[in-house]
Image (cartoon, rainbow, N blue to C red; front, side, top):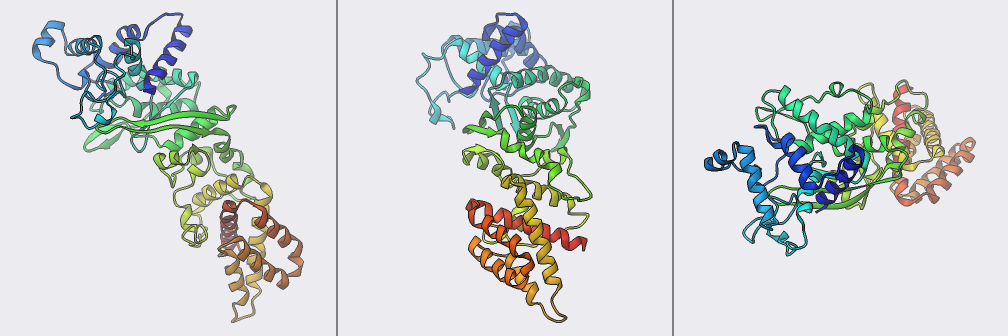
Length: 432
């Protein structure tokens, strides 16, 4: 399991940085156990592990405390060469009667004690996101930031009465977003507000999109990060390795100030990072990589032209301005060509003026404008533009450029370009 690899990777970095020589077992016993399990509230939950169950009273009396009795049981199972999900985090079921029995392994003789203890360290460095998934990322600087948050989580539990414990992955998701945004801030300036869930306080789960945006911003000098996504519960789910195309995600920030063509409000960066997405993480991973396409805004498709979307007309107003900007910046970031933004606005302006020139009581020009905005294919769009070109010769050169772009752009870009025209038309309609 990748948890073991990440645990070893972190420990190597820790030893180098702290001038120590811990094995995974030594680190677990001397550093990890005290922080995570000696208090009555634990920092992490591992199903079917000794820390999952209350030890017998005899064991508690023998070892002096509940946590030490649980630790002894864990050590005993590892020393007995038993490898299962209760002592090797992310590992196999113990026997055929368990719900994860499909993961039964014959690797017992291959996995060493070091691998097993390292899996606990690695799992505690997982970033929990919405959808109940956890991401492990092989990046030393990121792993160190997450490690720095462990002690802060323990303090946070102490300072927040009634807070649900065992949420280390969820804490990590919140912590890393705050830390990446404020790398030099003091720990007490990184507030995480709990929410009420079923009558109890809990740390809210961060969105996978926000984590992705924050990673892209902070590691902007890198092209790609690779994440391993999974869920460990009654039935384990593995999404596998997925590349995060940081250079694509960062286009949303790069285009932010160049996209709004003199509009009154410029989208703030934190409005981008709070973006709700059409795809969940599981579906995004099915694309093979996480880039701009996976970050499609949640409700944009309602306003995309048919048959791709719902074909609804977007109505620009003060109440919808933020949605408008989010939709628009994603569209132009996907197209990644300033000329297309300018052309979309020119076409929108032309269509608006053309429709206004209808004689009283007639709507022929307005109907042509609508047909252009509702074109279902590049060829239909071009045919409709030719008709407009005949009606308004002064626009002939501009429309020729638009037609050439529509014909030569990647086919999956055409609906985005047409959608951009539709949004600019809505904006101009509201302003005139």
